[in-house]
Image 1 (cartoon, rainbow, N blue to C red):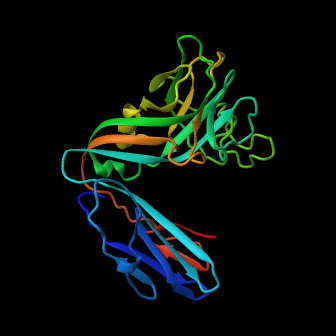
Image 2: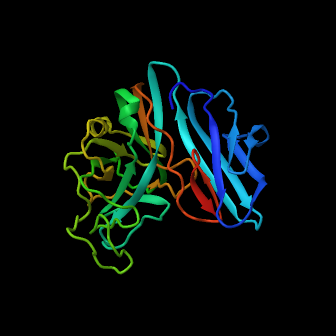
Image 3: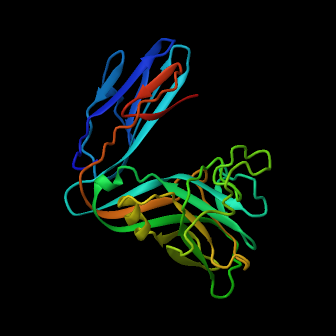
Length: 303
């Protein structure tokens, strides 16, 4: 969102079989409860927005029906103000890691991305670049940032290198294994795919390299500007694979995944000169549950 410091805020909802308890509606922008300022009717609520600063924001809502079912939804957006340089942080869309020692096992639900002490474990990450091309006039930098959750401190006297490579094939978080980009049945210990990708289909030349040393902790950065520039120009983009340069040498590092500790998931930081804003309206939910909340709220979950 560009140059809209007080955007219009609206929540739409409907009764899918049980009566809604409108008194239970809660609408929050960042940490500010807007519920009392909203105009609520039977199918929607509209709320005035305070003046927002540039940066990331979170709009969320919750609503119960009269039987107590709860629907919650949220919509995250970045606000960019004025001309000149902007900074945008994209959350990771999918991440997992591959294990040569368990070549038909998927790790997509784990809270870490492991690069193994000795042997072949490789991490995969992917981000949604849809709409970014419309947002960016001139890309100045694209930085992949990963948080070290565990360092094995076995990287030798001078450390050893880890490379990031552009992936050349589509893959799925719940289906990626060492053998398959998207195993159709990852629980049967068989490679259910064709062709096999044998540890990942990726560019042989790394996009960037970092040195992991004993004691290194916190965030590490890799320059992936060249790959993002290609994606913005229309090249296929499937994310990145990370592996040790010399996989037969010692060196264990575990990065946090999106299932890990809050605030430590992989992220892609773009610095750019702004262009036209993309369409930021999310799709309305389609799951016919008892209570639903829709645009601009996305991802409704009934609990």
